Amino acid sequence: MANPLVRKLEHGAPLSDEEKDALAKLMVGARPVGAHEDLIAEGDAPEHVHVVLEGFACRYKMLPDGGRQIMAWLVPGDFCDLHVSLLGEMDHAIATLTPSVIAFLPRNGLEVLAEDHPTLTRALWWATLVDEAVLREWLVNMGRRPSPQRIAHMFCEVRARLHAVDLAPDAIMEFPLSQTDLADSAGISSVHVNRVLQQLRDEGLITWRGGVLQVLDVGALEAFAGFDANYLHLKGPPASHAH
Image (cartoon, rainbow, N blue to C red; front, side, top):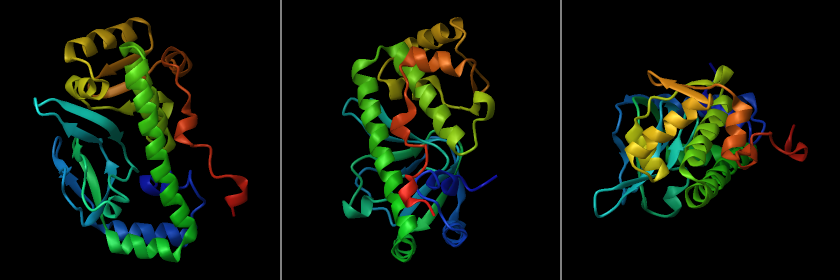
């Protein structure tokens, strides 16, 4: 299987073999991390750039009452903290949701690589801009969509993102999150999540068993959720930037 980071970045810019090889050489520090472990705490100044290679991670903040709000899911190919060095410290935390494999890229090595390869620089900025677009869509999702459509939209998004890195063939994907994780992502209770999942099952849209999510009818689920993948910008770079 292709490196998921390379597979993702190629949606933003056409990387050369030299650039792909240089990225791969930076990613020698990959290691397994257990579920529900912090990769970066709020207030940290990370020395490395973290990349998800396997599993799921998330961005989250804790509230004074102990509640957790998950603000983004991070899937294979995603950077956790690409440009945080410009801010000095983290204003949120990043944790694994499932057993994962995380690459630890030396920040200075990535910066030098980007300086030497303008096409790679473009791909890295594309990845950052897509992160911002996803955040905007989550704001719309949380603020304006009813909870069944909200969770359906999250399922559509994760399917599209995993499909983009060749990890969701036939709309079947590993999805070993808990209902609590889903509740903290959607801003509703676990009991409410259970009712929504039952509704989506009853309508013949999904099955979710044993940590595997299957979208039974992609078009129907997207119509139900009002999902449009344009904000993920997966159609490839503009022709003017292709080789």
